Image (cartoon, rainbow, N blue to C red):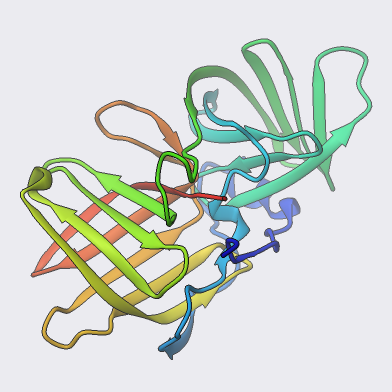
Length: 241
């Protein structure tokens, strides 16, 4: 069964108000739209949780202080900041590579990049790259999230509304059904909750720049899991077939 993914991506023009002002403004909208939906198939996840056609994610450290994540595809650049996800298309440039949408542009050459909008400029340097996870590496999985201290991970099945939790450094594993409690495609936010009353949990996915707090590896999504009175935080990515 093919992966079910929505192709909407939040417009890039709002980056100026969030990225270049040091995080004072967040993307519009108060959060995922409540749905409390119990589905028979896996949900449509926002495309901003996925790498698109890119083979890897790259981390950028910028001044003024910012952490960005990018994924370069053949026809677009996907970019994640602490405040949202953006998609830019190629533009003409004399040297290097340039991508633009509205007044937002990203120019890079080698390990250096400049991000500009009407509100200012960021000077960035490449820091670390990570190969995007594939379906071959995670069979049957459409989203993978993980965190540390204690080590945990979560995998959403690609064909059914269920997920597998692995907790406490792999000593506990369980497969649980879930229901959709919120879906905000424009801002790349998803909220899920347990569909099994005897085993409650909440899982939130947000399209934001995320960095593994041990390895520093870049991801396009922040993951928050609430389970048995504890809150686990980590990073993740959608996985295309």
